[in-house]
Image (tube, rainbow, N blue to C red; front, side, top):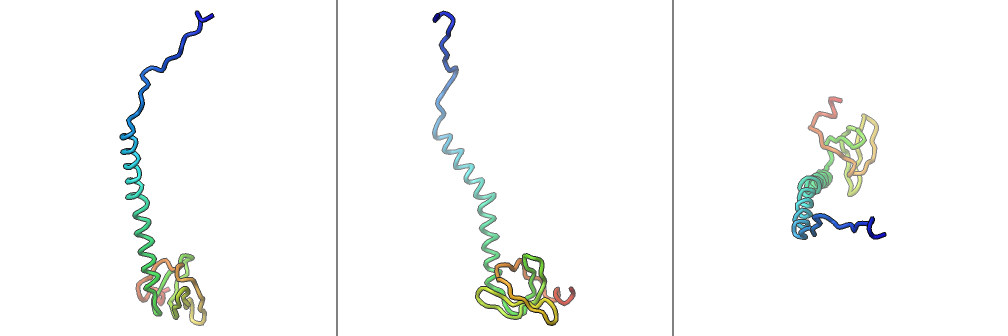
Length: 107
């Protein structure tokens, strides 16, 4: 019966070098850091500085697309004038960008 069954041997099986695996993992982490993590941290830092620097009179555009002029600022909120007699209260974190002066008046 053993005559028909052949033993299976792994051909050319080698144990991989663990240092090459570690080097590849470090290189992959480095690539992820410089391509994904670091730019996201820079963007978050810039937005935090933008929100901290808001003051009355700034013309802003919110994440929802509302264009207005800030009339009052508190720690977490800003009151934004969006038309002659209409003001809304928004979270300061929802401000996307401070637009150049005069943009609100042109719209």
